[in-house]
Length: 499
Image (spheres, rainbow, N blue to C red):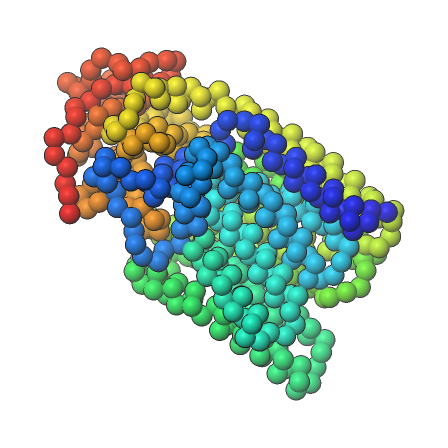
């Protein structure tokens, strides 16, 4: 039988195995990761060139946490190392927080915490949604905190309020999941206790949680008002619900769960089968304890939400809602599993979990390793580009499915160089700390049709024909050329719009 202490040691070793692909490779092939690094570099040190194009958004918006942490780390370590530190915090924090959450239901749930690592690196991670990933750490911490405290008063409520605020500034969806999950669990746990005193205790608990969430909820209402969500975002939430879309969502569950990983559909099937088997074992010979049906029902609600909500809201409201929910509802169902006290069954559960994790780690390691050469090729012109230049990135039509690791790879040219990538999607959105100065237009796609070509110093073409993307008379001698990468000189800017 695997003891609780040995289970924690084994869990730690599994976490270490997940960190190996992170630290043994130069690049993390995520979609938004380079953009986070580039904008955190602006926060850390906004040179005169960047100051001409960007300004810091000094207002309460989600997605601050990762940028602030990265900006602080840039004063200590190199940008690529800082990214790995943030990812390591997520990996370790996810394992610890879910273990802490499971502890709210009782002890001896080590193999359940290990099984949760199957969803440690979901599509959200490969998309580079680091803020959302860190909000998952806070989500499981908050839910565990609520479960472990059947009675709340001012002290725990103050701690809960701080956690809610931290979650809000990390990611809005994570915060909303934390609030709804806390109220759901607080209202439905201990339902077997009846009578006026039990009802008053539950009502008081719900009241303290609502009070703790109030500051962050007011920030949410203010953010929705400023971003125009009530007018544009809310009507789109349930738009297009149909049998055809339901069928498409079921067929796309593997991609939404694991994104670009090879054999994502098979991996999703294996993960759900493992969780289902653990649920069956728990129902058959699981130990009695705190009722787990409330978290199972919450997971079922999130599954319904996955099928009902639109994946994307209007352009400035956010999106990729389905992959965020696809990473959570299976974990809620996993938490509903009752750990078995029978030694043979426990060993069987551990063996099943370890086999699935070993296969998944092999897929992750191969995926990360296989993309290193392509990113190295994309960034081969770093020395030729130099510093304090304005870049226009042009890519061909080919895109990676699930998560495109080259979507924002042009931002690698802006780390510690003072360069400006005009294709900065975060600066053009309304929910990141950095934004374009008034009058600056995001540069994306066809250089020939961009209205501010005079601002561009260099055009970086990847797997793209200059005859197709550049207007006549703008092409000059190549600054750098290797394989699919071509960097051309363009006109230097003469005037820049300012506020």
